[in-house]
Image (cartoon, rainbow, N blue to C red; front, side, top):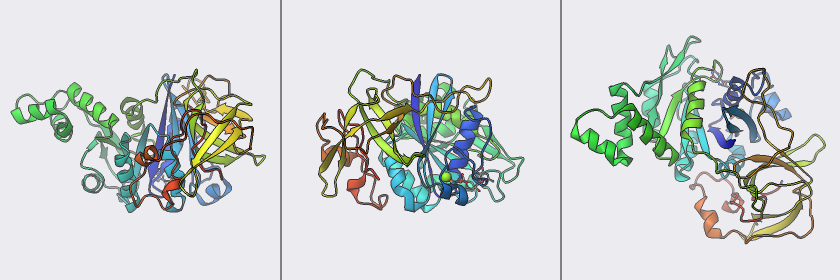
Length: 397
Ligand SMILES: Nc1nc2c(ncn2[C@@H]2O[C@H](COP(=O)(O)OP(=O)(O)OP(=O)(O)O)[C@@H](O)[C@H]2O)c(=O)[nH]1
Ligand SMILES: [Mg+2]
């Protein structure tokens, strides 16, 4: 089984949590579709989140597609909670940037896209709410290309926009017109396609365009775009195909190595205990294991603390509906490594002095720095990738 960690990012109210809910419901992870308006989604679980219908904390929802587990990381859209998004960015294999077909590209959407492009993170664009009155298609696509990236390629189109009857239909790459349109965007980074277009001979085949699209999406150079609606479910199946087919996979687990990972979210359990969400890079954390926690301190130096894992549970999808492929949380019995997300208890507790690996160099941390304008907080709070032997790179709250 391989794991993909996909972040859902957008401006406030674009429909990230609704889309997350739809993704896990359609895959069979949950047997009832929750709603942010009713306050019963999988990811908005805090009291304020449920009362107000806004996301405050990053949350993880897993689902299965074939032998692949996708961990959907739902992030907040409100700028006040941007630090949550920053932490999530450090652990993603790919992202889905959501925007509303009615509100279109917002200033926050541009900031997020600039960051995703700077990080070269494979990114899909999902234009949500095509069922809402005022939903646009062509004008919005032009806006997206002008304001977000000229290398956005539409893989679906809308029928009856702005009504409950609306449909999102895939565009056939087998059509010469569609293949040529996509090839014109992809040719900038593909000499073969460029030569075909310049020669003016046979239009590129669907397979050639698909291969170029896959390669360029994985390198963060092209951005496939899908129209859809989280509420009606239109376009979501095509998005899932894009997630598993076009976004790069997390590395294979390396359970034999020393424990290494990055904390990207922290929550309080029912008993008030701190629970850290750790994206594993290597090794299999065990109950009772001592680990070294590193982060950048206020003066820019590395602060190192010891922690002892008191409990650990991997985020696993298991079927919730008969016949469905996945859903729910696992029981914690696992061998894990790179790519998996674990819920880890006890990391705030000062334990015995266990330190391993060398502290991260500043230079390495800077490579992951988001462009200016994104961080409202000082750069030193940006979570860095922990070095060998560490289990966290995040400021404990
Ligand atoms: N008509 C329509 N409404 C939608 C759709 N998706 C989400 N909404 C509504 O948009 C509102 C915001 O949805 P959320 O899923 O909370 O949006 P969000 O991006 O997670 O919001 P924050 O996390 O607070 O930034 C809710 O009232 C949803 O019911 C959609 O596809 N169509
Ligand atoms: Mg939300």
